[in-house]
Length: 247
Ligand code: IPE
Ligand code: IPE
Ligand code: MG
Image 1 (cartoon, rainbow, N blue to C red):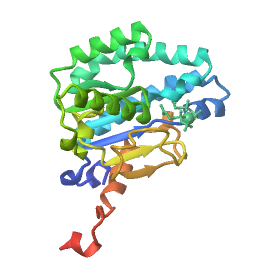
Image 2 (tube, rainbow, N blue to C red; image 1 turned 45 degrees about the vertical axis):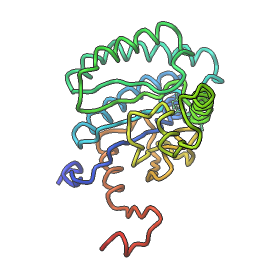
Image 3 (cartoon, helix red, strand yellow; image 1 turned 45 degrees about the horizontal axis):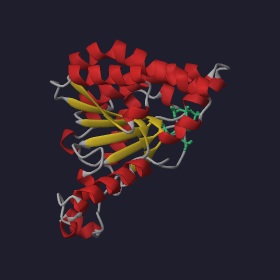
Image 4 (tube, rainbow, N blue to C red; image 1 turned 135 degrees about the horizontal axis):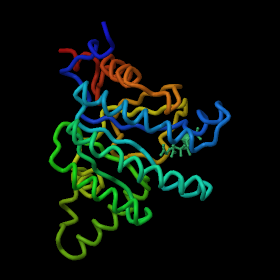
């Protein structure tokens, strides 16, 4: 029985978020430059997309570049931005063939013009697709996102568009970049790091967390399926008792 067959199709997370980590270490182990790791990370992105489509996950968020990543050496940043443009150019056709619609979250305006243009083209060219939402987090950090949300809420309260007494948890969600998507039910991080690194702090409030030692460039469909199977074996109690859940 394949791992895919072991997945209960009635209990697939609606949204999976991945911190794609370990590219640099993967390259170093091979005696190569860090960018070689990033280039090979694209294979793992492809594999994850295929696995998400096969298993029926409808939303997949990939943390591709964080606000903090701007502090890396300029040469690595440039290479990552170039890789982003090349990948979008090369993959838009595949996205369309597989019914995948591209979205972005993060401070997109801070990216080089060329990246912004390519992203916008790919977003427009995949608009009609409905099988899977691929949400790329680029120049993203959760504290940045929440700070912006607070500013926008304040502006709308001051201008009278929003009544401060009407602010609910739902209102906060609506002011985040992810307002169009359900919160992730499963968050995967590769490379054996056990931290959130400023990713979706509000949205991950009740997500199941799955950590694997696998370095991102080695991550394949079966690794994705293993995470889903692990997710399905957990009891999600949301503050209640086990007895309440199982009746
Ligand atoms: C993740 O791999 C990719 C990005 C953050 C862009 P890293 O580049 O962080 O790889 P390690 O953690 O140094 O191995
Ligand atoms: C998190 O990975 C960001 C992305 C995967 C894009 P990092 O490798 O930058 O995280 P830290 O700095 O080790 O926490
Ligand atoms: Mg890292």
